[in-house]
Length: 177
Image 1: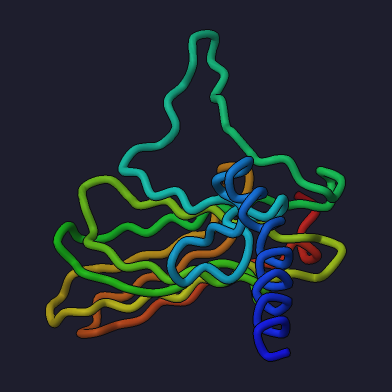
Image 2: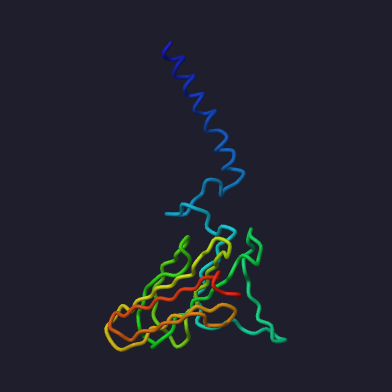
């Protein structure tokens, strides 16, 4: 009787695991998660962090190509904001940027060219783009943060204090852009 129960339990376990083994063989990424990942890497609405030392290059004919991920919302409901961080080269900073639903943590060293971080805000939900950065060193180096919408500065702040902090914000509801 005990042997029959043991064989039945083993058969049940094999039948329960078989679909996962077959799916794993057919789809190697099935059930694969990177370490610490709890949600989709790039949901349809998210805009990926961009940190570059140069502005986008102009294409022949004067057009600047920008790649924006597709969204599930209408394009008129999404505002793309660029946070530009600049200042005295060599100043070390850390901070965050994004909307209340998705803040990204960053740190860096000011270089000759500004660093750019891109985020998106939904007009219909009242998202507010917020960016906060702080110098991590003593000295009179300058740290400046700006929010750009359609290449126009809509908010800016700068500091040269020891361990000084800057904060900028923008709401698409307060703008006709």
